[in-house]
Amino acid sequence: MKVELHCHTNLSDGSFTFDEIIQLALRENVSHLAITNHDTTKDLENMVITGGKSGVEIIPGIEISAYDFKRNTRVHILGYYIDPGNPTIEAICGPILERRHQGCLTMVHKLIEAGYSITLEDVEKFAVGGTGIYKQHIMHALIEQGYTTTIYGDLYKKLFSRGQNGENPGIAYIPMEYVEAKAAIHAVLQAGGVPVLAHPGQYGNFEAVPELVESGLQGIEVWHPLHEPKDEAIAQEYALKYDLLMTGGSDFHGFYGEKEVELGSKSLGLEIVKAIKARKEAIVGN
Image: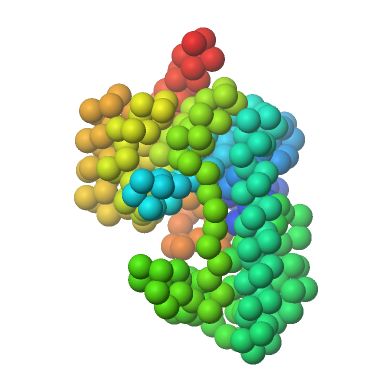
């Protein structure tokens, strides 16, 4: 049986519903599945119940979109076995969801003004049932209208790139305000969860690890589809140095993923689940 520790549904920026994810998990022999939607714990309690009835143990999780203001780079913090609806989580994630949604609305209007033949309704239909519009939904509408064939490609860069040193940004680029990475770790801990640094190789977060550990970081995602072998090696070095859990996941987004992956393809087995649970017990005990 496989363990999947990084998976998104259509509540954030995944293209599959939770029910579709469950069916896929059963086909791929995934017995333990962490739902880590961006900045929301919506429906996690029901997912735990529904997954259990289907024979898949759901690990209630989250991926908080944070920032390292010292190094001017994004930082994503995964939280495992969090308490859904925790006030601290809601307090920092609610505004992120609203800012993202409003920013994407502005992006759509900018594209319409630039002459792209899409409407807000074209975009919104792909975000139905979720927590707001994402750039993936905008790109899906553009694909439907024949402007491109991929989510992440030249058009995505042309439209949404923030440019070099803030110069020549994409025509629909809107800066996004995130929370401090340390605050994200604190929120996960307050929610009784285990905070893990997501895909540090993707955003160049290794230098920040010592500071994040001081804030309570408990793990680092070593194995990820966008990690090169050198990223895995560096992540393992930091894990050993700072006694961090070594996790891995496919970062499954379905059609909206940056890379085509299989659910459960970065499985580390049940031992990692036991290790995460042990960290949670230690956190709650303290």
